[in-house]
Length: 136
Length: 136
DNA sequence: ATAATTGCAAATGCTTTGCTTGTGA
DNA sequence: TCACAAGCAAAGCATTTGCAATTAT
Image (cartoon, rainbow over all chains, first blue to last red; front, side):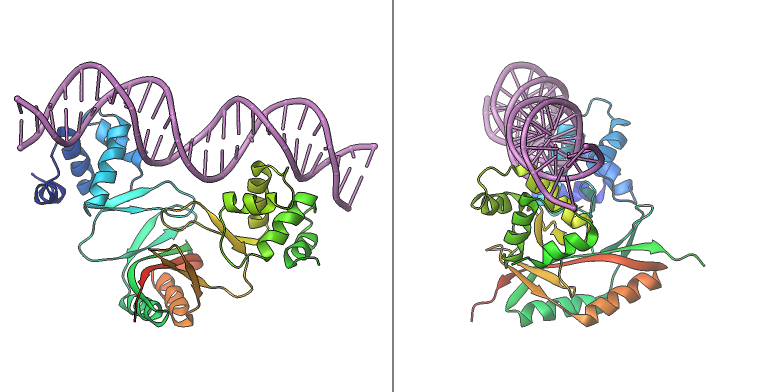
């Protein structure tokens, strides 16, 4: 029943407390990209006493350990998702907020190329598409 | 001596006050991407009485009028630049914070294609590269 | 045992806002 | 003139932090 996240904590030497296990559990069962408030709400159903400060501390810790990915989409508060095996980017529906993940190797390669042409080693990047659904 | 920004204000019916003119002037003379604090500092040299609230209100107004572009790069406060004629993206030096602008039509096209394949009309996007300088 | 973690509330940092006075068209 | 803008200080919002009590290893 241990989540992937718990395994990663052990590997990284992150102490596993009851609260951290719950945050890990909720996040590994979330298919979406909740913000801290939403995360706190979900975890509170399992432990009504957990404080939001702990949730903040936990996601920060997990993010620094490479266990979670943090996203600051335009106009929103920070959202989190379990750090994916394989990199992906996001398309955000500007009307509903719905998030779709996508991968495009060609864009990835071009980014690297652009950085190198400018004399940089590409260390990180952010690619977000904002769009509205085409009705058919 | 009127800046481009002043002309745009007239065209958009934005009332031109002394303070707004100064913010416009400073921004059109800035080659970089200052945050509000920095902008306030620069404008204060021309009018020591201008309040930072006015600077905040002005950049928001200008942004909504399409006169300025706002950027929220990772881990930083909001930065502004004069809205460019021709679209460009940014590469941020993770060591120095230095920002380099770039254009890559191929990436632009691919983004549109990706969005369409997912059933969306691309309305906006954000592409930021984070890198470290390659010494040679 | 004891160093790390929690909960709480207070503090922070950036940004916005209410209100009174000042001002551009 | 008079609707709108500026200045100031107070409020807001997401996030962080100090501290005393609790807990994992």
